[in-house]
Length: 554
Image 1 (cartoon, one colour):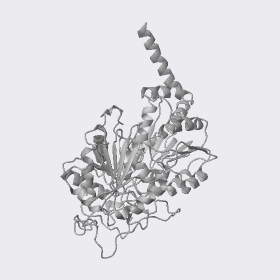
Image 2: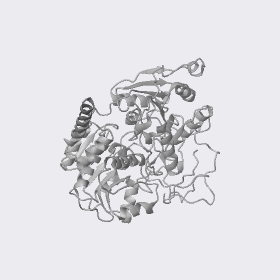
Image 3: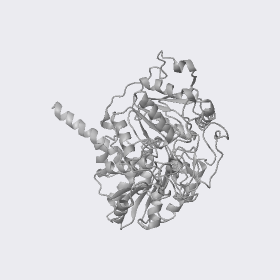
Image 4: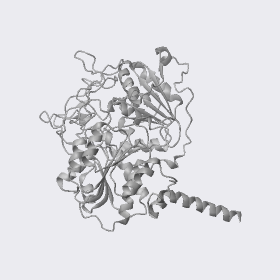
């Protein structure tokens, strides 16, 4: 009798789990998949957005990463597909999801597969850095769902590999990041090729005026949904800023990592990320870096090692701050203060996921103080600060910056995300875009294919990155200096060319000054380290069809 009651109670609970999403208008095929993946109740944004999308309404949604907004738009798309008996025509797609980075594209594709396991559908991820022929083959059959980054999508639209004439739903995810990356002109061109009678959804963590303007242009009487205060950090994150000199950041980081477990270290530049990894390796701490100069295989292996617990330290540029849900990150370290204040929110948001608590520490040198003030101004609150003396950093008595607050993760990796199938690099909004930036937004780059086909640096393979990080980013060519915390801010404003705003921060690279400003280290521009060109090398500006998986990091 007791066993029967237990079974009946379990069945009732399962029906309740399913009914929570069923009340929003989702079919049994979807609610069953959600129940199988232990999704019990909808999040606030899912409660708000799903019914609106099922009714065909346009929506502007403001929500931070980790609030469940992916499911909020994927589930209604799958619901429509399940009821649509008409197969997509060749070279067309019914639903288009546009995202800024390949990591986010891969994550969304994984979610589509997970939520839609009981719904027959054709899907494809179309991102830069991957070979064209397999993508063309997928699109030739017609797609129910296409997840794409802007640059590669424009390539296929121009070549006729895909058409948006039958597209009834367009999702713009992480719109504020696409603004930062300079993709707004591309977005406007893409949307203009779709039917006027369509459903459009714009999702963003913040709502700058340029995003609001875009929403007014392409959406039809949208519903505005905001589920949390704009740009506010997670309350469960213990934040501390350490005021420290640049030369002492590395030893301080090493000290902080002594008692840390699963940690993401954010740097401002790709070169900086590689240098931190090398420094940690010299001090017997294994870490991997992910950034725009890493191949698909390298980035995938690094993320999977971090997810599985094989490595406890991941060094990343801001590419990892958006849309990547890595469980049980206990500590985030801002090795460099972010150039764009909003990036701080996205960085520290990698910890304190799924109801957990987390810790975030920032290493702020004197030249980065203006960036700290910009962050505090945006947050409308002060972040606790501590002055770190030289003697404290260098003393071997066991100073613990974390103050014993770290709790070892449970290492329950069953909840970890599946390995994402990453593409390679995908950067520029256009092959000859003149607004070329480092992926962190700090350094303007020279467009490839200019200056008479100027050759790449020795040892570098040409890449023409498309979407995903900062537009362009040619050949990992660093505009000096890189590692000293100062940014050469001229030419970057975090926005599209048609929406300029003043940039905060100091410029670097004074005539006659030190090349990199790294005390005791190598010059940031590494003059004399490598020849400026590769005699007989391949010219820049070629297609990015070929992965450079064997490419060595700097």
